[in-house]
Amino acid sequence: MRITVSTTVAAPLPEVWRAYTTPEDIMCWNTASPDWHTTKATVDLRPGGKFCSRMEAKDGSFGFDFEGEYTRVETHRRIDYAFGDRSATVVFDQGPEGVTVTVSFDPETTHSEEQQREGWQSILDNFARYLRA
Image (cartoon, rainbow, N blue to C red):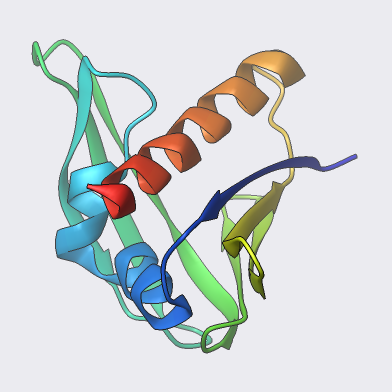
């Protein structure tokens, strides 16, 4: 059973897509809490292309690479990717209120479903705040 989170951003679709897929932008919004940050991001946005975001605690106590491979890319519409033995889908849907970005992902077994949902939702909330700023 996949976990799904979403946010709606009142911005043009090309701007939302760019902010979601550009390393410089990703480093500005890709965090679940204020005491973490993304220190490096790489994106090769094509099927078979790799991505990596280096996420670290600001106090230097812990860090990890969130990395994987794109399996499907439909510009301004959809991104599918695999990371480890899991996968995720990101859908960009233009509506009257703006662009809704919906992420569905396979859960892992270390953290509860609620913790995972909250973490991924927090990242999407930061994405929306970044675009509003």
